[in-house]
Every structure is written in C-alpha cells, then in structure tokens.
Length: 288
Image 1: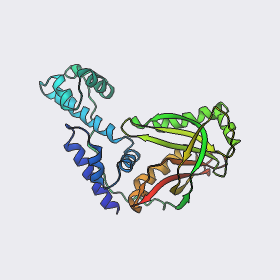
Image 2 (image 1 turned 90 degrees about the vertical axis):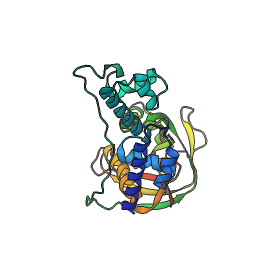
Image 3 (image 1 turned 180 degrees about the vertical axis):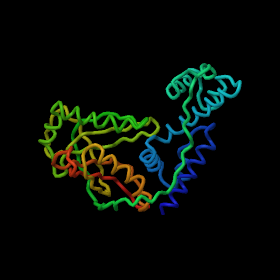
Image 4 (image 1 turned 30 degrees about the vertical axis):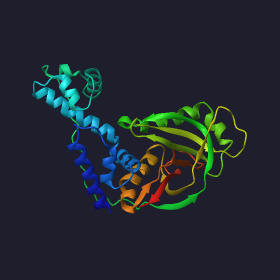
C-alpha cells in the first residue's frame, strides 16, 4: 500500500511539473492521488513542509530566473508565462524568493536560488510501531482563543509555540483551565484554507458550563471518527514529530483518509518540558 501511494505521489509531481506554465488545477492533482483535495493538500504539506501552492510557486520562479538569466526574454513575457498578470506582481514574488528584482538577474556576481523538483524515496527506517486507537465521539463545544496561522515556509511550526507562550504568560491558560473537561487543554487546527495557505489555531478547553467569559470564543467540534496517537516527550518537538509520522507513515500504510474536520492536540496534566510528558493527537478520519 505504501509503494502504491508513493507511486501516486510521484505521478502528482509529474503532473505539476508538466503543467507549471498552466493554471494550477488542484482538483486534477487530487484526482491523480485518488484522495480528496483536502486530504492530498494536508498530506503534501506535512510530508514536505510546504504547501502544494508554495511548491508550484517556487518551481515557477526557479524556472523564470533560469529563463531570464539565459535568454533575452522580456520580464513581462516571463511573468505571463509563469502565471503572473503584471510585472509588479511578478517582481514582488521574484524578490521574495531570490532576494533581487528580475531586472537584476544578469548583473555580475548575482546569485539565484533554485528549488529542485521534489522526489520521493521509500526508506526503511526501523522506527517504532505507531500505536493508535480509533474512537467515535459525538459533537462537543469548546471555548478559547484563536489566531490565523500561515503555513508558508513552515511558519506554523514557529507561530504556534509562540502563541502558547503568549497565552501562558498572560493568564489565559489559567482561566481556560477552570472550564476544562475530561480532555484537558486543547490545541485545535481548523478552517484549513489551502489556497490562502493558512488555517486557524485555537487554544481551548471543552465547554463545561453555560456561562463563560466574553473574551473566549466558542466553536463546535463535529461528531467524528478519530484516530488517536500518543506523543511522549517535550513540547513542541515531540508532538510535531508525531504529526509528521502520521502523515508520512501512518496514512499511507493504513488506507485511512483525513476527514474534513479539525485536528486536536490533547494536552494531559504534567510538565510539557519533561522527557516523559504525554499528550495525544486526534486526527479525524474516514476509511477508504
């Protein structure tokens, strides 16, 4: 099953590479992967550390730089070739990647960044087995605070730990703990917008009383089937590694697919900096 999935992933990269000069069609890529659009984009991001849109953008700007450096093509023509409707938009994106403007490409001593085509290989690592359990749970409500998080260049892995530091420092976590249910404190990843390359991250607890402070927002977590994984080790590294293993190893090996629902980080009592700290990752799933 893993080899079959790896081959489909390679087919997706083939398609993306062959259509870099055309409008980005994520629906067709998902069709090739034989998964939902949501599932493919989440898998791709967790395995590679970048979104599909970011990969396409970086590959286009790599080829655009090569074209400008080795030909007499006009900037506007290169911009249009790789999907930019104006020189201004192209220049802004080009500068963000290469650190220079397109007009500077041929200047002596200028260096450009190249983002190579992705390739995937099957590696037998001898990792420990991933223990998990499947749980059905009815819908429930949570309360807490949230913020939009970008996934560009893996910034979410930096922003979320800073967010936790902030709410721990200003007393918000202590206030939320007053309303905790059996699940304890929660980190919730929701509202995935793959085109905008962002999602909402919420630090929350179960809603256990009717009246809560106005400073907290409320959200309903839908009824779902959850695959639950244990994380052991200091935060945030341990839980980030569990997420990566879920997407790079567990999903391809089991035939499950991500359901279009929030992901939960369940923080159990204990010292989150300890080597033996235990928490859980809850992933909403459906069986293929």
